[in-house]
Image (tube, rainbow, N blue to C red; front, side):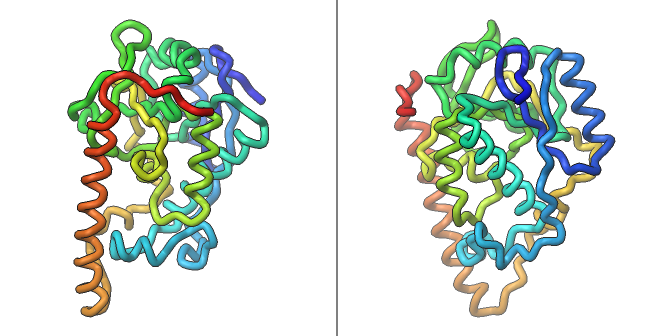
Length: 265
């Protein structure tokens, strides 16, 4: 098991044939002095999504009106396999990266600080897009000088860089037995999982948009192709889903006011 400078196992999820992506992340982690190992991703692009035992298709249709893409399912299954690895090896903490990540220079010093604060989070996300970083937040604790671990009132996407504890991996796996959401969406649904999920601000990791996504662009298509009756039912169930989701986000943001929780491992 490869350990990083701060003594944290570091895994980079990557399809085995993605040479350019692997070289990019290898160069970055080498520059930062962070040892790592590649974790071969599941290629879901040829999968029959609807029949996969880990996928909750009916609930997905009720909430979104369309199925996950094969790429989204493959991404989900890759992270799921890594959580299983964390439990099998009894790891207290692991850093999970995707191979299209871009890391800032201070990434390692914040990582070193976070290693000593695992009683304060289950998942610590490194998100770097301006859209995410400009949103409202509440500071929970400080890190490495100017950095803070913060709670956001929204559930931003992105699973390209995050720390996860043993407890976090165990509980995520419980929610991945039959799941309708992409992995980054599930990570953000803290009202469902009960996990303490925080983000580092200012942002330290973003996605390299120069790479063609293996998750497929169909996920951005908002068109709903359902028969009239099913579409009418979907409009109702979608509305109820959005109300419950908005309520969940606000509940977590306001109920966990300031200060970290004492986490039960």
